[in-house]
View 1 (cartoon, one colour):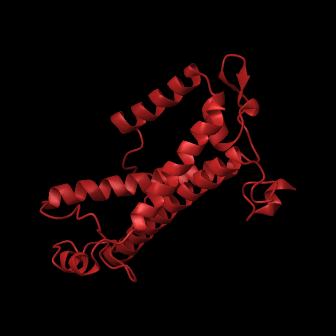
View 2 (cartoon, rainbow, N blue to C red):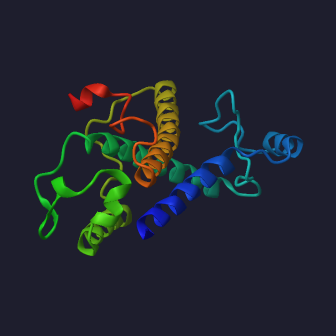
Length: 203
């Protein structure tokens, strides 16, 4: 069916994106390029990977462009953390309103299957909400609740946030891959629930 074909394409695209991220090119040339980078001492460079830029995105760019890339990484990491939490929450809770006229949130299937179920009006709400938040900066730099930290502790926490965001980006990719494969081939893993690592959610 068209749904299965679409899901197979989505699954294939997810696998390609993940494998390409870890595919080695020329180890010798990559190592030389990484060592020559002026940004190898920036926050976020940690062991065992060190300064990891296999595509050479930091080559021949100024500090302003690097900071722009870092901001994008931070934003994507935060979105990925929310996405992972959303994947877990939908397994146990639904909002008590209609995402579109006549379609309660409780009737929308979990995960990737929701792509086909949500009507155009629902997608329009999501698109304009996310777009307005991103464009107008509603979620900016909040002073409320911001701790007064010394520079060393602040740097440590900023590094932690980067690490958590990177982990969340990998986690959401795996959740999408697993969920997509399960939609194409239900029960392929022999398990009844998606979040198998947290069995207490389903009790």
